[in-house]
Amino acid sequence: MSTTTALPLAAAPAATGAVIHVVQHLAPGGLEVMALELARAQSARHPTLVLSLEGTEAAAIAGWPRLEEHRGRLVFAAKRPGLDPALPFRLAALFRRLRPAAVHTHHVGPLLYAGPAARLAGIKARLHTEHDAWHLADPKRARLVRALLALAAPVLIADAPHVAEAVEAAIGARPRVVLNGVDTDRFRPADAPAKASARAALDLPGDRAVIGIAARLERVKGVDLAIAAMARLPGDAVLAIAGAGSEAAALKGQSVGLGLGDRIRFLGLLGDMPGFYAALDLYCLPSRNEGLPLALLEAQACGLPVVASAVGGVPAAVDPASGALVPAEDPAALAAALGTGLARRDGDPRRFVLQHGSLAVAARDYLTLAGLS
Image (tube, rainbow, N blue to C red; front, side):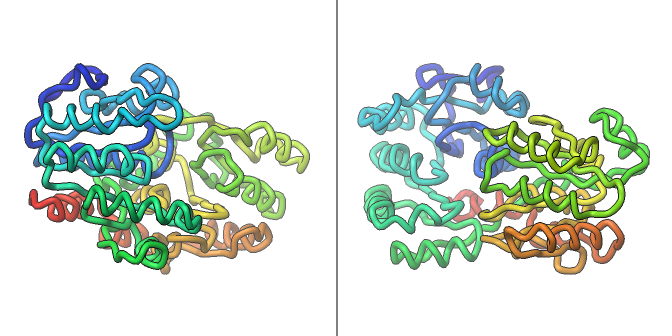
């Protein structure tokens, strides 16, 4: 079933018995990372594919080099712009040909197109995961999701307890909960030589504390709050920012305006996230809104203490012994917590992830819900 390149629908390989994860697009984001990593973890027991409704192989990999490591399990549906009423029928034909054991949709777009297609194709094991619930605050969206769930009839899942509660409040159906998880073999603490090598590779100083953020450079991620906090943080600690987005120029301008000089380092999109975490002393997530973020789990699996805004599902993802939660939109509180985080080393963040955020456990639980354990 393995191939050497990502494929369009017409060329998708035979996948009898596979688990197909369906996402809207393959671009940097927590939902997309989770689908890719679930597919990787489950492939030890079942063949897996990741089906992107939008985009093409060349554009996706050019925009997100991390996809290179997933070649062989990527398929692109080349969805037409806007509403594509023919797509469910094309997907149903694909599913009949591939004969997967399960189709797993992630978020509302894939539910709209691939959920009914899987049922039409006679795929018995259908799963749908809601990774956040903010969109269900719109009554029209809530009615649409309720109708799609009735039409596709999947097992409904949420990736965090607060998402499950919000989904139930909006549509009247209580999802099962399967917590997000990360690969604790891939994300693990770095020794001193590995840390020095990682910093050299990223052109980060070896003799100063380094705080890290990995995020889309968009307002919701609160990177501007972290930059403002750095202006309040005494000393010469460096903030290393991995990511890209529409706010990049404004954030660079903010850094210059605050006179932070080389204390703020913009690294762009990175493919080697374990290498990024290896270079850090502390991880920061200053978001204004979040689901249950994988980056917090990845950083803690690497042994890093974290400081994060107490929004969405974040509190459930932070080790209470080693990490700190701060109010959103509060650079002063964020600066104080960063200073404390750099000065202390309490708790065991990796142990927390092993107990509460393991990818292996999430992959197993999803297969069990699909009847494939």
